[in-house]
Image 1 (cartoon, rainbow, N blue to C red):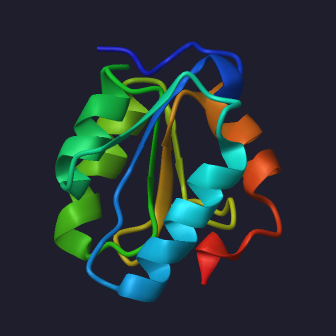
Image 2: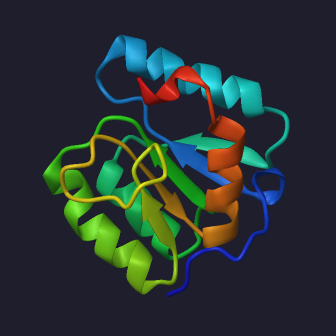
Length: 124
């Protein structure tokens, strides 16, 4: 399997999760609303582990989550990296099993997303 080769957010399908915190979920929706319509599509599927797996095999070009636990992210980091993708914390630093949030997907769309999301409240 291979992570997405898409060049940018505009040509990509993004998936995110709202989690269980109303305020953080609202921030994620605000971010997605700010990006729309500059993206092919958004999906919300409700599983952190599935989001990483789908990003690793390019079913989605990018997965974004703002509140993860070690059991959500541990295998996801390995899957995405082994598929040639990038996984970072919300601030762009390398993701670990202790990262609270993550951005995962193809390297180019990942970088473009972090550029677009800079300064937005989704990291809170």
